Length: 324
Ligand SMILES: Nc1ncnc2c1ncn2[C@@H]1O[C@H](COP(=O)(O)OP(=O)(O)OP(=O)(O)O)[C@@H](O)[C@H]1O
Image (cartoon, rainbow, N blue to C red; front, side):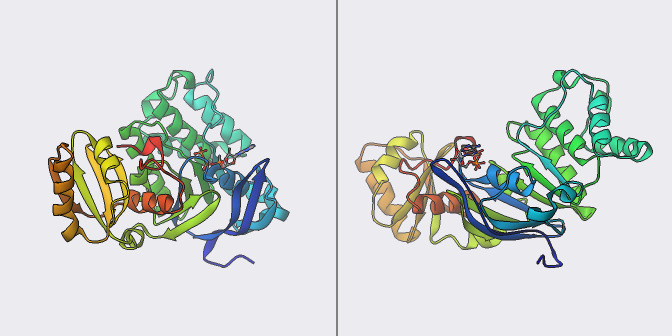
């Protein structure tokens, strides 16, 4: 039975493919009007979860309710209330922007007057008003993603499921994208999104970390950061790999991950560790420009959580795409 305040509920949702349990007893709920982020390394089970919630893949076990419909009984009716934007949204490259929107408006049975007003509003929010007659195949990657979102939203859904909607999208288009999402939240829509960008996870009301089909954490970004077991030290250095290798296994350091200009370490006792690190790095003939304690990011927590599960051995962060 769905609780009144929840737009999405999963209870023990499970799906296996030959040789892999892609989603393993997943249980969580997304409240109405919330934007909820699902993050995790490649293969964590994010897409499989989204496909089950969109009603395009049947679970092996467990149940899910979306927009008040139990998907095992009412998946067809639920589809009118849900909008699902898969990683490769089906745009017609040989049709113009307007023609693509019209196609999806017809598919969802949106009345002409309503669709025109909505298309104008969505295209303006997407910064695409000038491109209405351009062929979709001639749009940039970011614009294609935004057009996908416009098409997915043309029927005013209650629940939106977005699978890595901004993957590979330029920063300006990503900003437009998030502006549209926040406008939708103001209108009472519920959004569940997966993302490979952890700065985007910080923009969600709540975030869940998936790993090997299971949920490791689910909370607000602020609470997640507070829950990091230790402090984060930033080491600025020109050659982070040898420094990381040097520090691997040192007592008091639980995680070391390479960031753009150095390393982030999760340590238990930062006051004791800073001089010790300076000495070790100097003694090995390596250089380091600065070592300081910094506020934890969601990324620090997630790398700590995933490495703590024994998932990664090389000390880099969880996904290539997450590298700064
Ligand atoms: N149709 C399928 N057939 C066989 N295995 C699959 C299928 N879909 C997913 N898998 C496997 O299930 C696991 C979870 O995949 P899923 O795509 O859900 O992960 P993900 O978190 O979305 O990762 P990514 O960001 O790489 O898409 C992976 O091991 C994947 O290889």
